Length: 396
Image 1 (tube, rainbow, N blue to C red):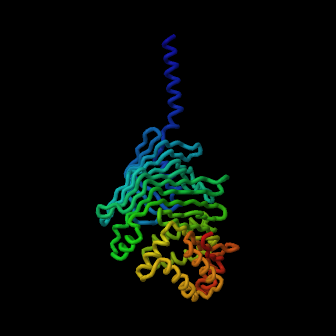
Image 2 (image 1 turned 180 degrees about the horizontal axis):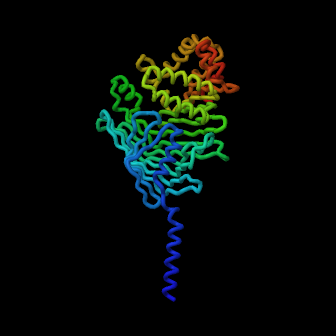
Image 3 (image 1 turned 60 degrees about the vertical axis):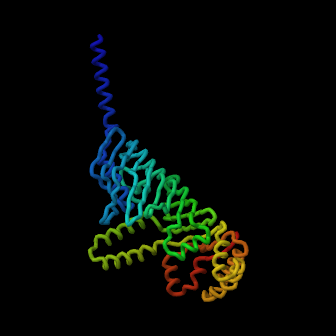
């Protein structure tokens, strides 16, 4: 009886192992092939020296990243993919992709970065044209500290970066955001004596702040929106940029890639560059301008600049501000755009009286095709502000 139970137990174990085996046997080569199929649409491919699989972990040794159609490949090193699982449709889901630490010195400048990884990487089973599955998707990309050292002195650093991507409902597009934290810049190593003197007078030997970014991309219209791109530094101010264009579709992206590949493949560089330029001109006709803005919110920098520049002219900062208010209308008179000139003068006067914020925006009533903008620039440049709906405001 014991013998029969033992045999049944052994047979059951063998059956379970047989059934379970394929679910845990990862095909590293298949994973990389599908990774390259998806990443190729973004303009790059990866190669490796060897693949090692251990359970749900895949290690790509000697990894290189190469632009599609390009010649030089970038050395990455050993890349570790952890928590790899098949997604049930032939694709893969990777919990964490870990990259080796980066340390490179070139011409006396050393760049180091640690803790580089991607979380929640989705690799589709096949590239489907016109869908987000034609692109690699991930939940989050992060890095640890990054430093730049020049001749033994640290000139730039940040404590880390975090970027995220989230799909919209029904695959309509994506939203994205990124934060670069604890940025520090050492300006004492600026070599130009005049610039270094000005930096010292302004008390800006070091800068500390962060950079943030967020936006969205709609698949159907190709509307690429950069809602915020901001640099915010203590005792300086916040410089912000926003932009939105339409027509940046998957077809447009593929056409850009194909044009770049054709240019790289042409041994005659002059001919290749000319052909690429013509291709770009044609592709630009598919894009429309929706809006753009650049703004600066002051955090004491303006008064410091006025004081320093005024001292060089032998006047106070307040007197320098009054001189600029009188000079600006004369400088912009050549624009021959009365409405915009009045906006600029009013905004400059308001800002110099009480530096808070200054904004230049362009938001036409209807999206403007890029060819129309280029035509205005060549034929009647003074009409561009009206075409784009340009406005200049202060302290709003």
